[in-house]
Image 1 (cartoon, rainbow, N blue to C red):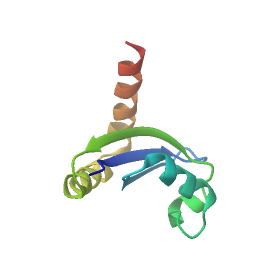
Image 2: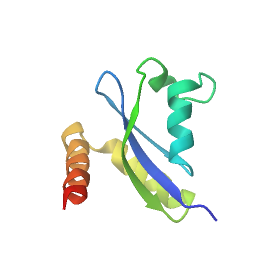
Image 3: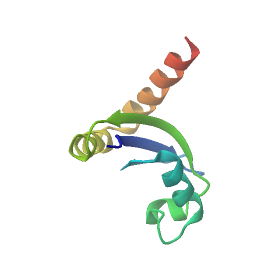
Image 4: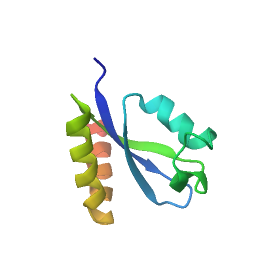
Amino acid sequence: MNPWFVYILRCADNSLYTGITTDTNRRVLEHNQCNRLGARYTRARRPVALVWQESHPNRSSALKREAAVKKLPRPAKERLLELKEQALSE
């Protein structure tokens, strides 16, 4: 069974988009290239880049986390991105 991912994209206008998927690479391609499958929000804000993702064991927990991340104010979302960068540089 594939894990689910909560992800954040940074759009060309520097806005942030949060979603869930089982395949982040495929989903980013859809956001960037496919008008039918990409989210309406990201269609006008291309290109988008994956800047954060978090793995979850099932769709239910991913949906709950997505809702929590979407409720965060922008500074808190930026802090998540900073924490990821710090972890990668260590």
